[in-house]
Each structure stands twice: as C-alpha cells, then as structure tokens.
Amino acid sequence: MRVLVLSSTFPSSTQPTRGVFVRERIRRLGKRCEVVVVAPVPWFPLNRWIRRERATVPAVEHQEGLTVYHPRFFSLPRYGKFMDGAFYYLSLLAFTRRLRRTFPFEIIDAHFAFPDGLAATLLAKTFSCPVVVTLRGTIVRLSGYPLHRPQLRWVLRQADRVTAVSESLAGVAVGLGLPRERVRVIPNGVDTRKFMPMDRTQARRLAGLPEDRKILLTVAGIYEGKGQHTVVEILPALREKYPDLLYVMVGNSRPGEQYRRRLTETIWRLGLNDHVLVAGPQPHADLVRWFSAADVSVLATQSEGWPNVLLESLACGTPAVATRVGGTSEIVRDGQDGILVPYGDPGALGQAMSRALDTPWDRNALVKRARAFDWADSVDYALDELNQALKRTR
Image (cartoon, rainbow, N blue to C red; front, side, top):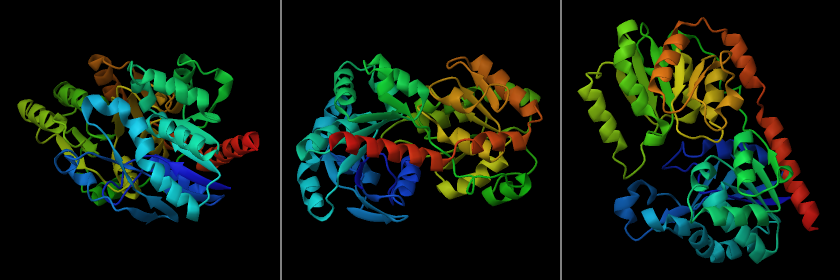
C-alpha cells in the first residue's frame, strides 16, 4: 500500500517538537507500508514578520526513515483562516500532481480535520483515491465557528473513513452529524522504551534542576489555552505550604502572540522570579528527564483531543493534575493516576496540586497505566482503516 500522509502539524528542523505525536504514529506506519509525508507550511507575503521562524523550513527533509515534503500553501492571517482548507488544496494541487509521478499513492491519510482533512478530501476526489481523516484536538474549537462548521460537516460526510484519537472527539463528530458507527476511536500510544522512570536525583541533574525542591511541571506550548498563567497565579498560595516550590514550564511560545510577555509580567508582579522557570522547548527524547525530575505534572488546559504529555508523564512514574476536558479523563483516572479538576476553577486546581504533592503515589502503578496504550496497537488499527478504505473503493 502506498500512503500519502497529509498534515501541516508535523515536526521540521525549525520546529522539531511540533506534532511529534503525528510522526510517532506515521514512522511506525512507514515500517508496514510505503509512506510519503506532505507537511505544508502556511505562507503569506508578510511571513518574514508574521512567521519568521517558519520561513526557513526546508522543502524536503528525511526524518527517521520518512521522506517529508514542506511545500508552501497560501494562508490569510487572522479572520481569513476559515479559507485555509481551500487555499491548502489549491496551493498543493500542482505539487501533488508532480509527486504522484514518482510516488503513485493509492490513498491519502490526513491528520486534523481542518485544514488538512478538507484539502485531503478535495485532493482525493481530484485523484480518484480514498481518504482517511483522523480527528485531533483542534476540531473542538473549530466546530464552534460558524464559517468552519459547515466545512467540517462536509469533510466528515465525504471521507471514506473517519478516526478520532479519543471518545470525546468522536462525540464532537457525532455532534456535527456523523453517525457514531462511522467514527473509530484509535488512541495515541506512548513509547515506553523512551519514556520510563529515572532516578529523580539523576533526572534533576541532567535537566539542570535543583535536587532539594518540590517541582511542578507543565509540558505544553506556552500560550493562553494551555493555562500556564492559571498555575502561576495559584503559586503564591501554594508557597505558604511549600516555600521551596518551583514551577517549570517546558514548551515553545506561539509566534506573534503576547502571552509569553504577559506571563513574564505576572511572574514579576507576584514576586515569583525564584519560583518559576521557563525552560523553553526541549528535544522530545529529553522529556523523560524532565518528567522524571518532577513531583507532579500539571496541564491546566482549556481543550484537548488526546494530550500525549499525560501518557508520557505517567510512563515516567509522575502523577498528573489536569483539567477534565477532551480526552484527559480517558488517560488519567481521577484519584488513581492523578487528579482531574473542572476547567476554570483555580481553587479546585490549587487544592488538587497540593493534594497531589502530598500523596505517596505508586510509581509502578502509574507506569502500568501508561503501558496499556501501545503504539503498536494504534498502528494496527490505523492500518486496518486504510485497508478498509482501499477495499471499499476497489
């Protein structure tokens, strides 16, 4: 089987941590069939100011056995984003025609319903091949936008097969009119050979963290929806009980956003300079030391599809405090693997972090929970969906 994978959320040499969860599945899929990845980069005439770091993404890369192309697609900023799917398709049409001469793909595997799923479905109709669309977290937000909602409905109706990485996302698809039997849930996995418990002292030394402090950790993009500011604002109250508390943020900021600046101002205003560390983005392979170094990982996020960082935390034996949104409750069992709280309740979040820091967690039980989610199973199910779509077309 020759599979064309389409996803604009995919790692590159300039953004190595972007969409790692997509590559983790695709690189394993690439061992079972022929795969070429097309990971387009949004382009606009003012990109040199708007997306400065993306301008240097190479046209083609080779990543862990995968050939990854990065063609540009025209993308209007801000209020024109609802047109991304159509521009994505039009921008890639000639490129895909050329690619098919050397790689005659039989099926398109699209990750994220929009803009990737819309463009992939249009390309599949153009080239008379089937398409499988995998739903991930962004559909939660986009399904509430009046200009995106009808486009999402059309993608779900037209795709040959639809999968979702969590039951919560399958519910969003049903809310858009897709019969439940038409969407298959295929959770992401975790690589337990890469993510496993380390000695905490050793992990802290490798990460450059103090060995004698209580450490809270958030691994996520640093932008408002991930909720780091909520944790920062709770820290003064937590410091009364844990004077040596240190909150560590690992992740990259979004270009063009002012959130990081506002976050820094809040840290200064609350006098938390010695209690907050913004470590920035870290290589995915090194996250094991950060998770192992932490006492508790925290994800105060507004919405999620399937947050793999929670699985990776548990695989390292570190409990998680997370907001009960999207697929978080499908990973973290409240009271067993960590603590879940309602989104938008700082009081509950603060109490949960305090309780998590005081609880003597069974690290082996946390690791066992993570091992229930194996990438091998995810790839088996994904391959079955691709085969079913091909069989239906033939």
